[in-house]
Image (cartoon, rainbow, N blue to C red; front, side, top):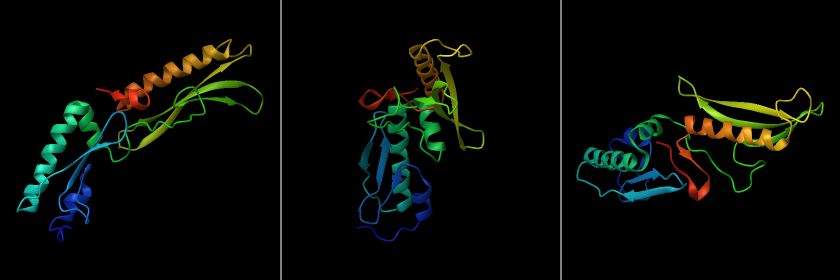
Length: 173
């Protein structure tokens, strides 16, 4: 167990670095592109600030190795999740693409994603691809679904830190 922290605000405000009360040494947890975290305990130094600096050095070095400089800066600067959360069972073909039927009967495939705004907040965006009627963009469901998947992948490459699904996810550098 650790002693009372002299600089608790440092540990509370810093992303991916923590020093839980039940641990002797602080932890650095770097997110992996395929999900989960890579955790490492950093040995305690006589001075708490020196310990904190060592944690930051390791976090920066390992984060850049995994994610690349630009994406790692982005991950550290954003207070919210920037890695798409892929569920085991999705309602559509891939995460962020689903089938929808409007109340008047028209059907469409919708691609959804989150865009980051200038002030740091995120905004949910979507684009629909209709099919099956004379006014629709596409003749068949398969064409509309393929267009929705393509749009989702374009936006995922633009706004998200990872590409792919599950264990095949890779860092988007």
